[in-house]
Length: 160
View 1 (cartoon, rainbow, N blue to C red):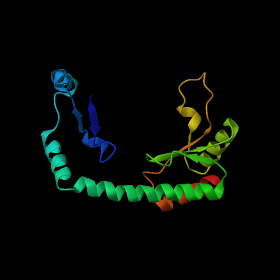
View 2: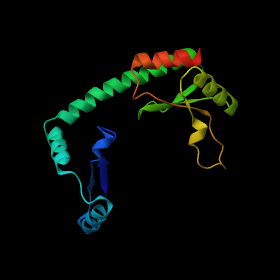
View 3: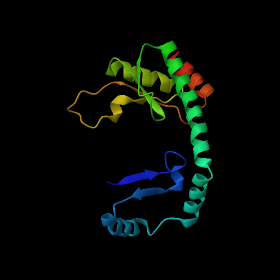
View 4: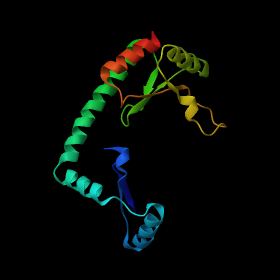
């Protein structure tokens, strides 16, 4: 069994730190592949990240961010519930959710109306790869980078 992880989503994508827990029989091949891929990893960043974990900084950061993002998610869900009868899904994980709409026409109409008001919505239909399968229609709404006030203001502008 192989376990992998990264600091990208929990801390900072630019840090470019990840890890692998490998069975001994795969270690040499993984080390060789890593050398070929990028000639090594930054030692200072690894040491700082290790200390950040050891002193409890990462745990504190994650607790703080979970609360922050939960507030943002809840603000988005509350605002959507009060404005539309869309089916909201995917609220349990990640930094986005999906608001399912009834049709491609409604999806297109909402995206265009929001854009005319300076708000960008990403249509769910744009995420489908297999064109043979029926595509669901809706909006992929990210909330990680916005404050609760910005979320509420953006939805007010886009949907009123």
